[in-house]
Structures are given as C-alpha cells and as structure tokens.
Image 1 (spheres, rainbow, N blue to C red):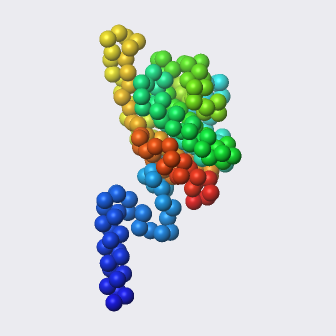
Image 2 (cartoon, helix red, strand yellow):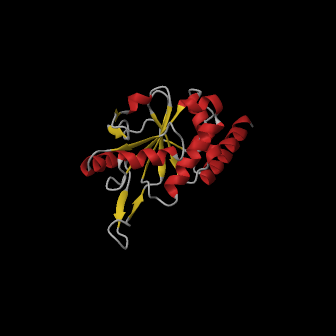
Length: 203
C-alpha cells in the first residue's frame, strides 16, 4: 500500500511538473525559484566591461551582492525600461536587503549609448544601477556569444532611428558570484523579489 501511495505521489508530481515546466519543483531539497534555475551552467561565468564612469568592472567587484545583469539599449521603447523598473521595484520591496542587490545594464548599442547617456539612463531607475559597455563591437560580440545572447541592429527610416532586436532576459548571480538563474522578460517584480530573497538567504 505504501509503495502504491508513493507511486501515486510521484505521478502527481510529474503531472504538476509537466504542466509548469519545472521538474525541480518536485524536489524538496531544491529552493523553489520562479526563474529558470541554471546553477552550474558552463557559460556567462564572468565579464570584463567598463562602467559609465570609465572604471573597469568584473563580477568580482560585486561579491556579496545578488547581481542581476541585463543586455539592452537606452532607446528601447518597452522591454528594457520595464525590466529595469521592475528591478528597481524589487530592490525597494526588499527593504534593507535591497542594498544587497546590484543591477547591471550592458549596452548592445555602442553607437548611441555613450557613457554619459548610460549614466543618465540608469538614474531614471536607481542611483546604484550601473550601465556597462564592452568597448568595441568585437568585444561585445564575444561577450554576447559567451552569454548566449542574441542581438541584431534593425534599420529604421533614418540612419539614427534604427532599433535593436535582442534577448529579453536577465542573468542572476548569487552573492558568491555564481550564475544561478535565468529570468525571462515579463516574470514580474514579486516573483523576482522572491527569487532574489532566496539567494540573499544563501539558497
């Protein structure tokens, strides 16, 4: 009878996991994240970028904080500002723990996103968020390849009115600097806050 009940429990769990796409939800030993758990991934382990003040930055600079890194461009009409606004809301909702969250915005539009533009753009969301740039198209391409990020310039009606297609997701690192989560666009501030809180707590 116990074996039959155990099998029923496993079957029910499999059904729930199949419906949600989260098999890990059936493993009580794992934290219950809303974002995709990519702990142990062999890519996107670090970066070498420059912030809008001209300071070289690597992941080690933010040890002790949960880092949320997003690739975008300042003239993005919706996805980028929505993502950064939600992250600012997350930081605020966490109270004192919000100081343990670092937002990073990596520009995929080096033609228009100058350091001054990036700095002003970040001020719209949170004064601690940093805008980063690769320094050259070749370095940006190499970084995007390492992060498995897609981006492409889409011509507009004029040479300066182009837009950028790009991957709409955030990479989240725990306070030890390990890549843990992949948060797709549209996840929402509250689920993201829950995930970040778990990472801050050491999960």
